[in-house]
Image (tube, rainbow, N blue to C red; front, top):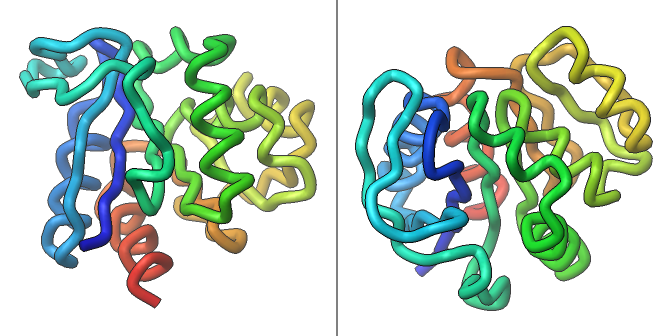
Length: 170
């Protein structure tokens, strides 16, 4: 079975970006696992409560077919997080789906995996952060460049989930 790891902040992840993306992945028959900087209950910006399956330090990229970094204000904690960057780089280097939504594409840019890739991000100051990481900002709601899939925010979450499922199911 195809397995996807969803990485969220323990507080203030964007509810729809986790829940809607997860629903679309599961609807397509993919298995989802949630990771964060700590286990236990994580809380979304809009009040969603989800159980975290494992800590970032416990992630084995080989166990998954792809990794999704979920956005929301809390995800900024991973912009310069060494463990998050290691996961992103290993996922990318192994040719697995490397995905991020909202402001989380900045994590991928800072990890160095967006060089020469088309990508999108929540607007404003984050566009420059993507471009400084070598990405070509497209402004699309969902951007697919090979196995790198990015989306610009909560309203794109369902299409983002469907794009990831399509990329993984061929």
